[in-house]
Every structure is written in C-alpha cells, then in structure tokens.
Length: 308
Image (cartoon, rainbow, N blue to C red; front, side):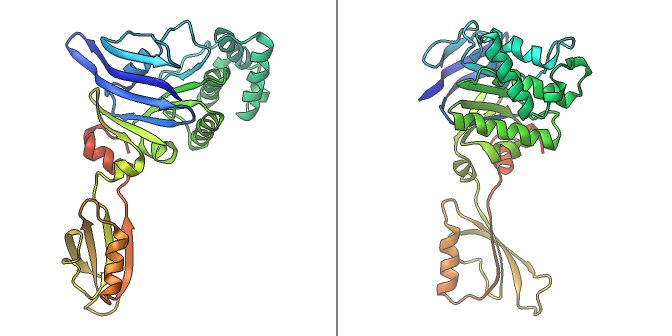
C-alpha cells in the first residue's frame, strides 16, 4: 500500500522554483532515499508533506488523505535542525511529543522508557536536555519521532553530526521501522547511508527529479569496469567500449599487462569472462568494479552537489 503519494508537486518562492513537477510514492515497509545536494528541494518537499507549507500546485496524499498538520498520529518526523526544550528532562520531552501525537500519558511514558533503554539512555531519563551531550540530545529527538510507532517516518538529513556509533544506531532504527511496516523516507546528500539502506531512491537536482528506482537500476546508468591481467590484447573483446593497457606490477614477464576495460551499456561482465574462457585467454586477474552510488550521483546530479 502506498503510504505517501506525491503527484506533479511544485513549490515556488517568488522567482525561485524550489520543487519542480515532482512525482513519487512510498509504500509500507519500504525505505526510500530522497537524495540531493543542499538546496535541491528535499526539506521543502518534506515540509509540504507535513502541511507546514502549502504547494504551489500538485497533490499530496498521506494514507489516502490530504496532509493535515492536526493529524499527526501516523507520522514521525526528525527535522534537520534539531530543537528540544533544554529545561525539560529526556523522558518528559518524549512523553510530551507522544501526547501531541495522541498517546495517553501512561503509554507514552512506557514507550519512552523503552526507547531510552534501547538507546542506552535509561540512566539519563530524568536529565535535562540542556545537560546532555549533542549525541544524547539527538537520540532523544529521534525517540520523539518514533514514540507513536508511525506509519510514515520521515527523517531530514538524519545522519548529520552523528558519530559512527550513533549513525549505526540510527541505521538500525530505520531498518526496525521498515520491518514493522512503516514507510520510511530519509533525505541525505551522503551516499553511503543510502547505498546500505535504501530499497529505492530518488535523485533530485534543483527541485527536479533526475532519477527514481533501485540502486541496481541507478548503477546501470554508468558502464561497468573490468580489470584484467593477461598476455592477450583485450581491446577487441565483444562488449568492450574502451580498453587501456598498462604494465602489470608484481607480475614477472613483460608480456603480462593489466587492462582496464569499460563495458558498453547492458554488457554482462560474466559473458565477457565466458568469452575469454572459450577463447583460451589466460587470465591472472579478473575484477568487476560496479559504479558506486556516489559515481551515479556525480553523473546525474553534478559533482558540486555531492558530499563525500
């Protein structure tokens, strides 16, 4: 079931078209990466889903209905700009957000303590947010997004500022929410997280969709590369678009050379290897290098938009 449906969405601020004819959907149990550089329109789109700002044109449906900021019981949201009340305790903060989302106080408190336990913060439940480290406060904010066990979980640049340990915790929570059946959408311009987590993804550039599909489909936009060490000239192999030869380091004999082969789109690397075998071509090395999501992003969105 499609939890979030967006059709021909556009948002204009004066002369700036921040979101341009955007269409996509996210289903239950799916992890959807919303990828783009700074200013690509990611946050603006999420704010329209939350009914914080209204579209210039197009439609949005959350669980089959138009967005309504008063109907928050099915949505969890982690904003890019973190903001909690510094004078409130961790557990009271989580309970407060749970109450805003329609939970009764005992259930909100029970779930809040479960989340703090899971985040290794149970001993800091009564600590004020202002007395916590940045990482601890970020985990409390994550708990406020999860307290209502949302059907749609939206995370805006959620990995920003997190250390590797807490990045791993957040990845686990994203996977846990999807296994529970939530539709998860998170925006980022760091490709490694999307590559590890996403079932599907969308690449956005200056408000306009450049690609939507699986990571495998995204990689298919760039040719595969093969690295081989052999005595044979491989430039004429079927499916090879270009070939560059160099001396093979660490291999005795001048006749052995290392070849870097760029395959034509749609060429199966296994078929090229099978051809070498059938022709009796001796190989001392054979490596297939897939394009990374970072490479695809640079190709489709532009190098100035990507963060390593």
